Amino acid sequence: MQGRKRFLEKTRLSFKLSERVPPHNFYRKLKDLLDLDFLYGLTAAYYGKCGQKSIDPVVFFKFMLVAHLENISSDRKLLEHCSMRLDILYFLGYDLDEPLPYHSTLSRTRQLLGKEVFEQLFDKVFALCVEKGMVGGRKQCIDSAFVKANTSLDSLLVKQEMADHPSIALQTPYRKSKADRSRLEQRALEANQYKLVELNARHTNWREKQKRRPGAIERSRYLSNLTHYSPTDPDAKIAVKVGKPRQLCYLASLCVDAAKGVITHIQADLADKKDSRYLQDIVKQTKARLQTQSLNMHYVIADTGYSSGENYAFLERQDLIGYIPVHGLFQMEREGFSYNQGHDCYICPQGKLLPLSRIYADREGYWKKSYRASRKDCKVCPLKQTCLGKSREKKFDITYYQAHYQRAYFRQLSSKGQYMKKLRQSKVEPVLGTLLNFLGMRKVNTRGQKGAHKCMLMAAIAFNLKKYIRFTARYTMNIAKAAISPLQPFIFLLNRLCLSLLSIQDGSELSGLAALNSKTLNY
Image (cartoon, rainbow, N blue to C red; front, side, top):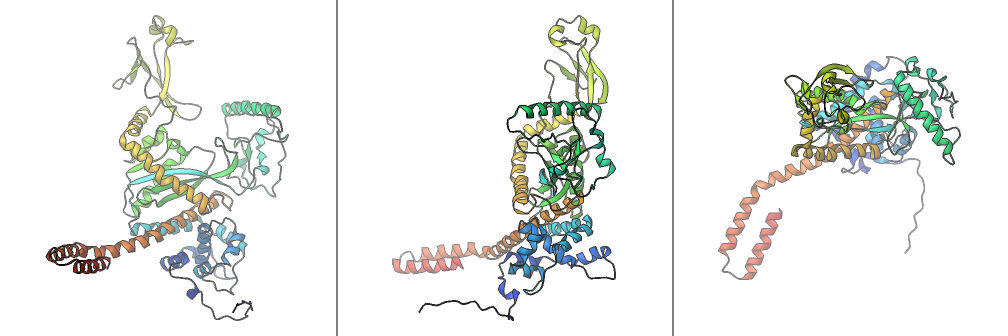
């Protein structure tokens, strides 16, 4: 007989979420393993003693975890998604007929709580990973990626000092913002005259190309952090990357442990500076966090973007070995010239000395050493036509940290250096891809560097918790196997002995014994 199901909605239900969520569910495991009651003490200072009750801080942080675990970057979509998932409601502590908070409550609470609370939650989860043996501490891999800011390029304004610049006209934004949240120093021009001349030439060339390009937008602009700022989110900077369009971003810098891929540190930085500018701060904070867990860091592994003489010297002062490839502008040696380390001078092919002339900082702020030969020696040199060019004497500049660069260069060429390069690629780059594509960190839904830092911390916490739960399951299975494994060699020897004693009997008894032995081994 054919059956037909008719839906008759009931006004009263006899229903328990705990009975509907299976034991193997991720959020049920997370609810049993994660104890967040310590957050009540950490957040007590942010609330008064009278007035309307706020959202439970533990529930708020659970909402933030769910947002990143479900790859949701909107508070409205988060609440809609949570209302339709039984396991998430059970994790949050809400019943089916209990209303969820408004999206503005989550936004205001995120702004209210300081970043110190988010960092202590990160330290708590990190301590759980250390307790399970997931963190080695010795090898730390560092990398970074751009994260889109919660603002648009259409609202950019020209800085005040650039309004009268000959090649940059003052233009009205495509979409005017409601308010200008920038400070006076963020609207001021920080570039020196050398940078302005270079920027002027780039802008002029770009405008000429736009005129010749068919289909170009008439109102298109050449955007730069030196000339424009965002009134909506002044901390967001224009990210410039080869082959990709310019957009307002933050820089997510993170450090990953090479043992099991646990994130040991993450921070939100400004996107208008080089990666190498942030390495020292990352290493200091990571080293301090590891030392609180009685772990020591020995190796720092990063890509060429973190290469600088200051960083190499810093790592050596910290007794750390850095495997950071040197960038392409570095020259290992001067062709035809030999270096005398005792007298700190170079010797030309004719045997003349080029002593140290001065130590100075160039236009970019990098320290260099200048070596210059005597004009008398170069005047009578037979190689002056090919060696000097238009100069009267031979001179060249090298980086102040030449010795540090050389040591890093030889480490890079060694077999261990090649191994460290592959280790970094296999550890930190997949973590960055997971955070950006699957854990809601492609775009931050807050404004300001502090808000972006909170979002990145919660994404890292969600990543570590997923690894923690999976590792716990494997860890329990390994313990069960270890409990049985000591008996297996004795059972194997006993089986061999029985087979040898019964080898003269017929095959039926042997087959029965083999079946019995197989059951014993499976047990």
